[in-house]
Image 1 (cartoon, chains in turn blue, cyan, red, brown):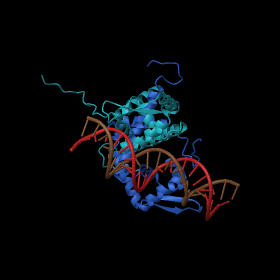
Image 2 (cartoon, rainbow over the protein chains, first blue to last red):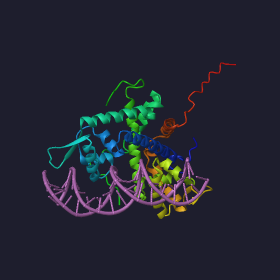
Image 3 (cartoon, rainbow over the protein chains, first blue to last red):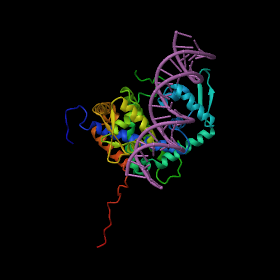
Image 4 (cartoon, rainbow over the protein chains, first blue to last red):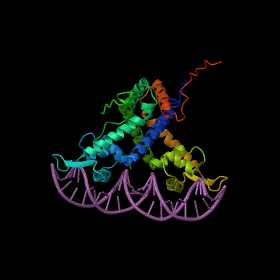
Length: 156
Length: 156
DNA sequence: TATTGTTATACTCTATAACTATA
DNA sequence: TATAGTTATAGAGTATAACAATA
């Protein structure tokens, strides 16, 4: 392809990034719709999908990329509906969030809906899926500087 | 990982979809951070990035995948800051939203930040970028892509 | 009568800051 | 003093329903 040497990268550097963002938008919209079908808000669904094991509130905030003060409310609403419970670790300050049986059930529903409707499973051949996984792995290998404990603050 | 084998396609169908969602999450977080640097909320930034030409409020709502009542407020805040203006079309009910010069300027800033920081441009080789674009195109092809070029025109 | 967009309402998410309770 | 989580507060996004203006 015509290699414009104006930029160290590529003449259509933005086109690639834009395509990725558009795909991310579509994926997010699909996810929000699935969450809504199960009467979950998007952050609630994201929390459930990431709660593989008892996790401290602060770490959950890191996963959701939001302030820890938000997790209090999100977890409270999920607790009211019986999807999560909270216990304490050895450090009495730490509150460990955990899925209940009902929470694990709705997580399975989420996973199933995602697998069933994702274009990654419905529109791609198996070799294409493997190629996609490889590319996505490479994208995220250092893009996210490892799941930082809690130090996720933006400027300003 | 639920290796539920009830799917005729692939035992790890969910793994592919999950990977895509995780990548979408990371991409969205990066986008939100860029928007925040320009003092824009995520929906505001998405609106600006999509406003290529004068667009009716309802169509903007379609692009943002939200109810039209929300666009009133989002557009009002962007209007207060001089990024968008509204005019009327031939149908007096329709309100056409349009970027101002200042709005086009901040859109260019958004695009540049995205291109500069996206892992799609910083972590991928050029062939990989092209492969990624091809896969994403296939993922998002809305209209049934007429998957059959093999027309079987043995008739005569 | 149907539509486009607005307004009213209620809820959730969000960050900041101040607070508590542990450490 | 430092850390984990909560509470208080304010602003923004969100959907639903009712409304005005126009078609």
